[in-house]
Length: 231
Ligand code: GDP
Image (tube, protein in one colour):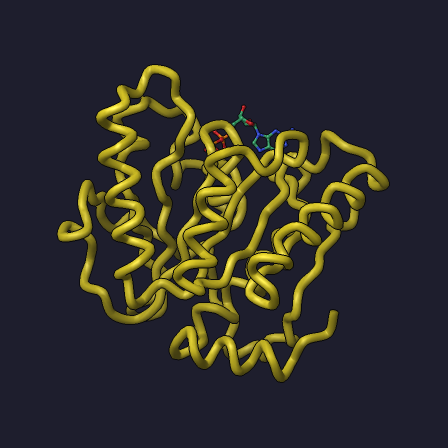
């Protein structure tokens, strides 16, 4: 299925295209002070456990082993950083939520550190929120939206596992979520369907990330958004 999207991308000059298949594991951080130096630019992937976040990162980077898809709760409680082949550009895999086995104290630890990461990380250019297209906008997703609203960080929603729905229902889901998110995030939100299984939507995602990672600051990004809105 041709991926569906609602965004405001201008076409990327070839020279700015970032090669996501260059991503390599850099470091895992358990707290903000263990993160790599806060310079350059990075984009973070967030999503509930089982939403398809690891598969999406692996599909984007064309590396089936990069973000582990078989997870143990321990491993997913870390923020994982991946270096791209251009200096100071990174992908970030934020911890997934939803494991029944994770103790409340660990969830609280993560909420606190995620909050701190989203509030304080200067190099963060945008958040990709991965949601299973059949189960969108759960509690964790709403929390991420509130964080993005509070911090004014741009949000790109990936409605993944789109191969599980026909085109009509997929489009209806995308448009209804877009409508809800536009109310709180305005022009700071973009949305697309994605399938790791069929590799649908990879180019849209990489274009969005390239645009974010090429922007100097979030302020510059907002200026560009205003000037290039197509929808
Ligand atoms: P994570 O917990 O969010 O990192 O989720 P995973 O990437 O590990 O995916 C959870 C499950 O969904 C796995 O069984 C994947 O094979 C499956 N999955 C992930 N993406 C897709 C997709 O695009 N289509 C389909 N049909 N299954 C997917």
